[in-house]
Image 1 (spheres, rainbow, N blue to C red):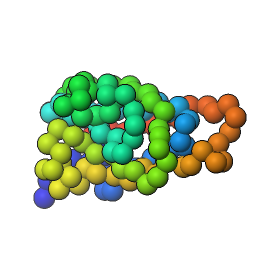
Image 2: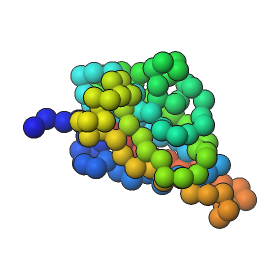
Image 3: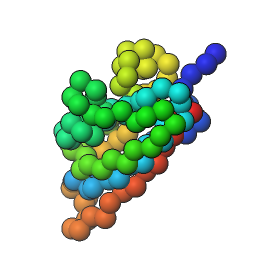
Length: 119
C-alpha cells in the first residue's frame, strides 16, 4: 500500500491552536507533486486557506511555504490536502486540529509555530 503522510506518520500530527492567537506554519512538500493544505472550517484569508479554487498558491514539489493566520472560530477542525480533495481524504491526508476557545486566552498572545512535511 502506498500513501502520502504528514511528518511520516498516520495519523499526522495533532496541531493545537488557540482562537485569535496568531500562528505561523512552515509547510514542506517532499513529494513530486505540488500540494495544498486546507484549514477546514476556518475563516481565514484565501491566500492561506489552502484551496486552489480560492486562489491559494500551491506548495511546489520539493518546496516550502510559510503561512500565517489567526485561527477562528474555535472548535474541532481538521486540515487536509486540497489538490484532489475527495481522493486525498481517502488516501489518509486528513488530520485533526482543535482550536481552543478565546475564554482562556492570554492578553498579549505570542504566535504559535508548527512545521510539517509531506513524505
